[in-house]
Image (cartoon, rainbow, N blue to C red; front, top):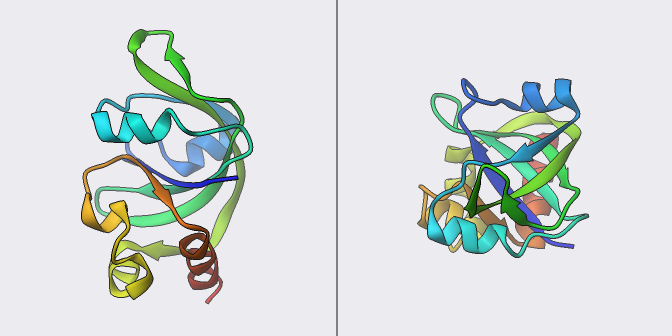
Length: 133
């Protein structure tokens, strides 16, 4: 199982939208590096849902429930299907993540514009711990 962080603008599609819908197709990723990561996602992988914009924080957890496949609206792009797991106990902000040495090499910090990035097992556990505080 792998861990991912998926960015979304909450005014376009928020974690609350996913929680209400229970399942969605995660689409709209166009950056070649983010698409490269997305193509390696597998069913059963876990994902942090991160709100961009004014919030800049991890908000909830989703599970990837399909392998990556061509976007039905644009076969040059790739999508995955997600289902809601749960909201984090408390949001974990980008400022908190950037202040944590365990994220220094993370694409989230180093390549901030990517909307789909891998995170390590240790980084996943750290976000869970930070959320529980």
